[in-house]
Length: 371
Image (cartoon, rainbow, N blue to C red; front, side, top):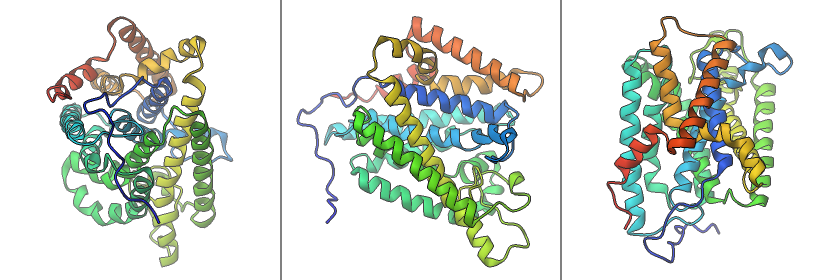
């Protein structure tokens, strides 16, 4: 019988609920950030086809944002006790700080939306997800993954059912309900929280997560490709919403709703596949870069610096896009954005430490004392 009791509290009240920073997680976060930049300005292919190398750049469609969301769950887990979240009263303070962070992230997201760049901003959804996971911070990993699975199954149904309402709800509604739907992305955050609770510092767990993530992703995409091949026009369908051709039979429509492997489509296969990819990437980065000595730290530093200040780098690239007289969209443009982001992050991290927006949000959160 499954044990549904909450994870026991720490033995020492008021003890720190976070530990040493995991460099591999920062590297994975940099991969997500640079991938999202590629999706925004890289001029990538519309749809991935492994048989056609010219489309391989489309790996940046949907997967970086899913990785970003899974990493949000990982970060929440790492800052709320790792494998052993605290009990009362500390967990209440952790939840209050998380709520403050959520409000700050949403506010920054609204500012970025006001810039009116042709980019869908993920931060309002990100902040909403912080609030939604507050009640489950002490739930065991197995149940977190169960809830995530339920969200993956419900994801396409909710996306289709709510699409008409959100389509008329302005830019924020389009992003929360269509491009970055909350139910879909809640699955990712819950997976990330479960991963953090399983101990990312353990070598055996890292290998197990790498293998299981890769197997889950491969299985999902193979099943989807065989049972729900993409119909004509799917590559140009609206992101975040499942698509079926007008002449589809009921069976074909059902398959496209749940099993389509189309990138960024909110189908169950898409959610499971991208979550598997995200877990594998995080596990690989921690396996390669954490606890591997000085040389590994130096090699990882450029990307780890970017990943240590995701809010600053993400917001900064949108501000730069807004300031440019012409919207950049090419591999060369992405290369320049990536290079400048890395140089900026390395310099700031070396001399000033925490990123400016991260410092500001942490300052607000620290208004809630931990003791």
